Length: 275
Image (cartoon, rainbow, N blue to C red):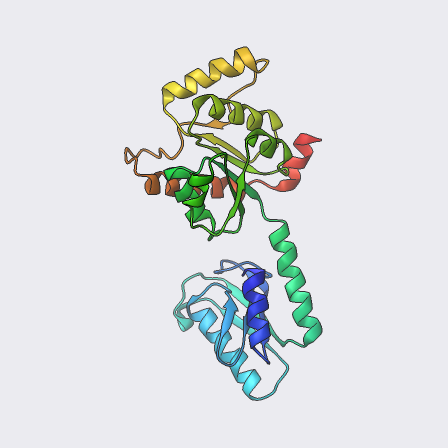
């Protein structure tokens, strides 16, 4: 859940129950620590949906109606509840006082502050399509361009940075960031891609273009960047065996690649590489 959504929810709802998965055995829809908040008529967050979530919603609202401050559920995820995960989860339900509300907001804000950064360089058709998808995902997306009019065309709820020195954004990015390069200028693409690869702690570096463009970049990296290796570079991006070049399709495939990288590589490993 997003901090802004949680804060708005808690301001509206006089009574709310924290519903948290506190133990998982085997397969389950969500991991330990997954939280949703339930009021008599609304909810925010999710513990995975499906029958498990419906059962937890019902239990939370029953506890609120009976003025009971806490509860516990131990649920097998099998045929008896219409799910086939095969695991088992324990759920703790606790009515939230003012301190618990403040603590949860702080937890969610801390999670947001730790989100991986995804830099999209170039606010053209594909860049805007990428921003539209990343705004819904657990990342901090930054759309970067030197063109005011192109940035203005993006309706995505992401951070937009107007700058004549986009390479400074690469240098100032936190460890573990992803860099997607698709500007209006091939020379600038090469510069930004080289900056991303030079860092060595990026989780993903990709540049739009053909196999021919990749070969040209490899020559550039060798001759102009002290033999910089392009082994970690994703180029072409958004291929996946498809020949569809519509911006939305390319963006969807790139997002899948980036999110796979972001969710399978730990920040600690990347920090160790850099230090």
